[in-house]
Length: 490
Image (cartoon, rainbow, N blue to C red; front, side, top):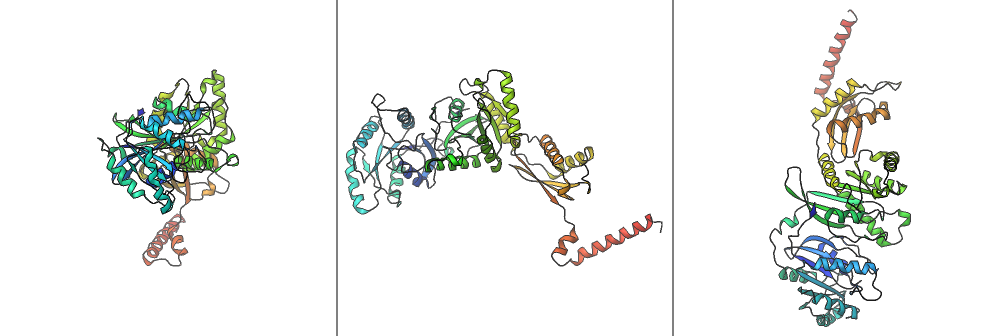
């Protein structure tokens, strides 16, 4: 797999911290994509989302606030350096830069520094003074033309004013690219990485793509937004297909969520899991399996999403005995994900990374399996004949027939006599039989037992039995009576 080349005109939203870049990004997209908070420096990775502005397909890119521009300046920290690198990568292919400022604070030295830096990149630029919440503030917006933008468009993200003019100006200034319609097409495969903080999710994304697409650091909680990264891969027919790799924030225990930013990050992660075709549950195998991992696994199971477990940092377990012990712990602590394939890998040296995409595709294909009722009932009949259900002391459990309701999760409805007669061991046996018969080893499964209701019981519950049904029941009773009489020798 490799990062997909962009086919849409690129519009990059940039500026110093806390001027409302992510707010503008969200209101233009009409979705809550980027996390918005009054805390400065919330956005770190670049977040890119296709959209249609003024009737024009574009790729909108939100970037982190430029706090310190020069790497050599005193006081520059690691995160500022990484945010600057992300911006440079974003504007390299940009068709238009949108410089967002704060009209209430006026032109600051940092605004001038950011503007001068953007002019050196040689890209067309719009200056957008934000927070013009009343006419007096909108009148001051013209002062921001000193920053060098040919067009200054005042907006208010809070009151959603000035946005139509901005959309029209963006559509007028960007140019079409070949294949831009394909850039809006839904991906063939969506893969989301989930796990607790600092297990190597972002490192895995970069290793899979072969480039530094997202910020990686030893600081837990570096990733905050759910970052969508398009990629290209070869499907089972050998054709080139488009996928989407979603890097998510590390999932914390709710008791350890300290602020609203972390809460919003958890919401984005939960949304990413629910919309994924396959979830890569990432673990640090050197730390074993904690209660935290089990809760994340339960989130994936409750969402009904297919899953592949990535046991990252296996280079820290060099001995076979150590890896076997981890696999035994994983099987013991998370039996509800026993269906999920496990890949021992290392983002440091790329060990086993060639297995990840084929395994994800295999699990995705399993989630598309639809079992016809005829084949399902043949398997159920053969299963019950070979291994009849054991007696409960009250009676024998019987399965009459079944049907597949949906996938994923693989939801089977089995009609039976008394569902209380089905013992847990036999229910597990039924699940294993269905998984093996239909190749559903990587897909979550739900087996619903329903007691079959006789026709007369159904209509008696309604207080009336229709005449045709009543006639059929009377004829059946007559036949049964004659049969019993012959058996009695009458």
